[in-house]
Length: 165
Image 1 (tube, rainbow, N blue to C red):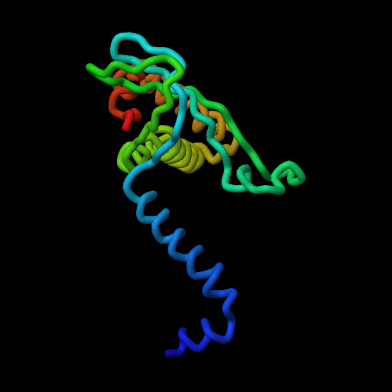
Image 2: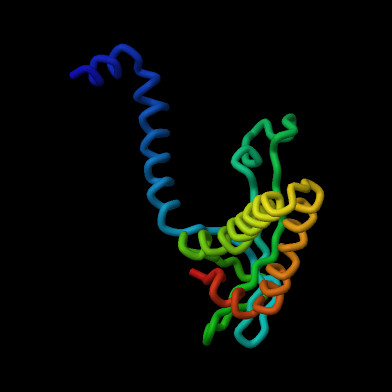
């Protein structure tokens, strides 16, 4: 009853706010399942496809984005491993990744390096009492981590990958 009175008194709310709220709920539900990008196939090999996507920030699609410095748009190439499909260069496709894949990529790219940096920083500072040594040691500790990541790049690329929908 309360909401019906508000909707009757303020008809603009029923025209704009309610549909936006419904669209937002649908977008959040879809977002929780998969990450999706529409792109165009740039090149194809046996089981390897390169898809060119245009990643835009939320305000890049705004009508006044050309007048604003906050809008941003980037073009990226994504590697997709697809078996037994016949895709052609120039074909428009939708690439998807699960939230699990995105979380795994975040942990490998940001979480573990940050944790290594902090643990080594505090451990070396506690042992030596020298801030410069602790800082250099913590940054130096990332070199073996990124070397291991580089050596395992093909295995990681297959486990942290997009699929074509």
